[in-house]
Image (tube, rainbow, N blue to C red; front, side, top):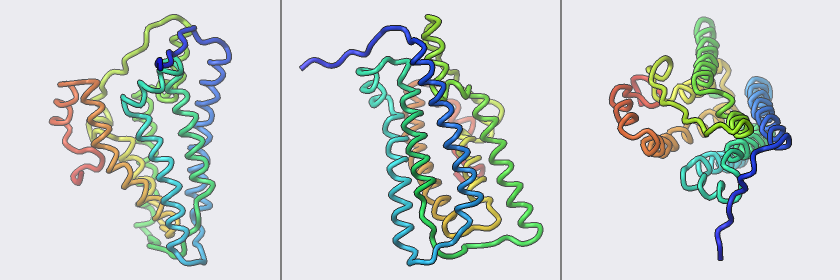
Length: 245
């Protein structure tokens, strides 16, 4: 049996539309998450906590499995054996956005409130969430949001430009921790002043996923950047949370 060969025809208008709408789906999924975490996740459930918590964990696990497996180098090679290399990231974005939407919209309310911050502590919680959003925005800008969404690859291919190698970022927010977007995520999800059990399950499961995924992600980064990433690991000690891990 022969291995399928990816199409090498330069992308046309349909491919560009696919890429841009995929980027829009990514933005929409993030907007739905922000609304869900602020509004729908503020509600506590009324049933036994274990059933909704298990459903929520299963939902996020499906999203996380795709998010991790298809981000690895070997999986990317398999995908690009059947689709053009310039479409791989956009396809990944589409699937990840759809799964994240399903996760947020299908999230089950878990009964109980873990904590509710009073007074100045409440303001500190909101400040942590604002800092998390700021870190995420700064990190995304530094990495090129269009590249992350899969649009840049299609645009470059349409103009017959060679694929761009995203440089290793070690300054700015990347000088604080090696994964500032993940640090921003942790600040945002755990900074909620009113931590319902619904929010807590989401914060806990998603943060545990990041902790598990980081070693695998860094192994792939070492394959790409070699000694440069090893030196970065030595210089910037902390992976996600400064002073902790």
